[in-house]
Length: 284
Image (cartoon, rainbow, N blue to C red):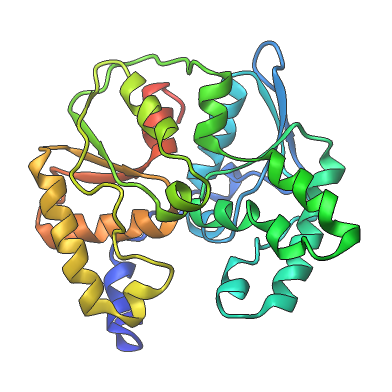
């Protein structure tokens, strides 16, 4: 058990999602046609954590994009966004990864470059700052950033979604700090959640405040992180929501652990926004 190596990691091991069967996985280099008229061509960025342990959410992302008329391409030669390298001061490695991603996504010929992880999206949206001092890469990085979008932005732009069932219960939302504060995306997720038939959306007090996941903050400062998380869950509980929604894998695992710690598992669940939208569209 991993808790013998790290007690904090052991806590998160309990809330890891079930891995999807290999035969359901998408493949790098694969193309997926739009359903109906093609409104846009999307190059999808699966990310590292999302690709490794939340590939079902990535698959559902692809299906939601197809459902609103987007052709989806997964550029074959893409790699890590470089966020972890940049955060640790490994700028040279981050620059190499950024250049490789720009080349891979340029080659796709897509109209937009879409991700569903707030942390990855924040890094992708800052490639112009990372490469802006290199004349050869300045315009290319600016063009990349201009096309880089969060999934919620595209779903709003090319929607509406083809909802097919009503949602039963109250939904609340926890902002991803990277999505809200770096990418400036906070209205679109709320707009989408409010659009779900039958759903009652209630704003949680302090939803714009960090859940204390913070990359690996919750691993290296576990006790402090849990104090913040427990208070976050108290605020979530005040909404009486049965579903807590977020838009980043780190935030999602943190909120899932919060549900576990609050003793409400079975009554309350934490989900990625893509999961709840796909469910309401009967996309499995």
